[in-house]
Length: 260
Figure: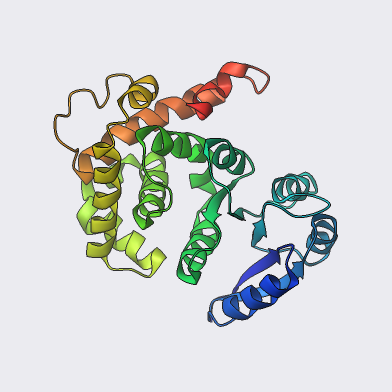
């Protein structure tokens, strides 16, 4: 039997903590190793018990969710974070990404939380180097983060930027691999990706898209297919990641495209 995913849960409402804990522990592959209703208590407990992933509301007393994630990383804990928030917006999403996590709207369905927790933990370490560029690219293209297809596209791009050879086997290799990871079907993965791309394309987010991608998508009259989208995005993300690594951390150019 595979080891369960160890979740630490933090929320300012004791009732929400109780309900979420009960729901999460009904999943066969998860266990809640600790809970807290404020950030300082959460940090102390995390240092003692550890965890594979942090699930936290942003508006915690003491330390907010972002500060908690930063402090945990500063204490040597490398766990990813999933942030729950009733407030959205580009600034909140970007802040979550810089903390090594992602945002889920509050309230949201349990299946969304489970999918995001599993995806956060299952991401191999070799795929995490390109995560800032992938998040920025999907945001610049206009992919709605609340769609299931957004998670699938992010996971696919983490794989293709690490191993571009997968672009030659999207249907036979990549879709089945993602389906297994997310407990879905290959056809469902393909459809969800397609829906996310089409919704973003119909919004005609052209100025932001051109600012980030240049002319990479300028020649597409119709919505790019999943394969073409992944191919172009992989090439751009690799270039952005190389730029990220080349500029020193103190150079503001290193972060400029994160805010596009």
